[in-house]
Image 1 (spheres, rainbow, N blue to C red):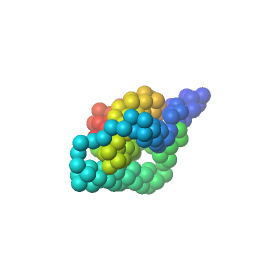
Image 2: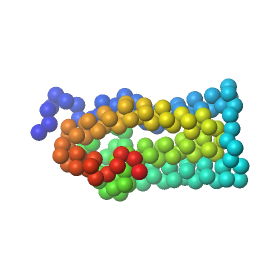
Image 3: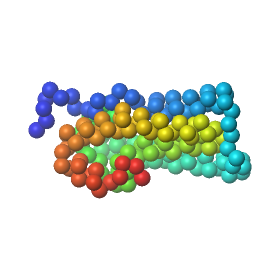
Length: 158
């Protein structure tokens, strides 16, 4: 049984969409200050970047539809009434963050902006420390052995 004094949500203070958006905007600013480009020819760069963005958007749409189907909110600051282990969650424990990372990488590639791509490293580090680890602690507290078994059977990323 849960301790009623503990709030029923992850202690997340960083909103993932804003983290990724901030990282992309910082990449744009860095490119204005220190212009660096990709050596990949435009004929491949733009379609590859757009394909990554499309895959990321599709992944996020799939996650949101699965969450709506189970009456859950994708906001990590909200309560999680039940574990979702089907749909995209069969392949990754964090499919929405995987989609966001794909979108950021795709934008960086399409715009020939390596800063946006390189900033994925600190962005994913911050995401892991400030969001994912807090979500995992909350889900372990709330669902115990069921969540631990899920962690063992499904990777954090793809």
